[in-house]
Length: 150
Image (tube, rainbow, N blue to C red; front, top):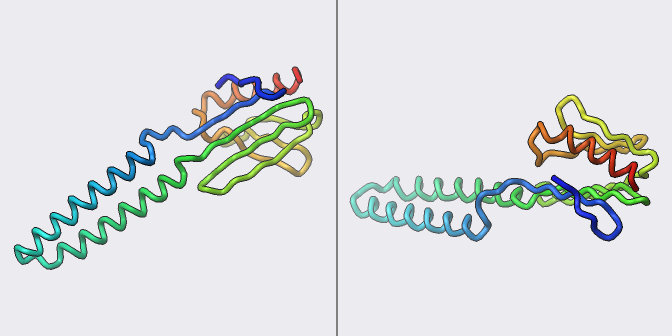
């Protein structure tokens, strides 16, 4: 959780904790789909005609769930604090965003749900989704300290 000094700014980078890579995910899905298809063909030959539609439905359901997982596997938050700006970038479910705040006017506080709220006037954003809840207080303190030091 320590920041990195990068191009004149303190930078924090938080990612989701994903235990399986996209390649491994694809391998698991194709192995499951192949096994399910072979089992459906075996049942079809034994007279179980309804096994094939259920196997197809099961494979489609698993494919949809893994697709949702894969879309969110690359989610991240990046916070950069320099003398000119407090920049926050994020990716959530394939959607990207970026917002900048004036370091002299920015407010950093812990919200009631435990996320860190960064605000300036009417602009605000909640960060810290990929941190354990007990580390968010420390993040807010570190962000305030970095703003004072720049």
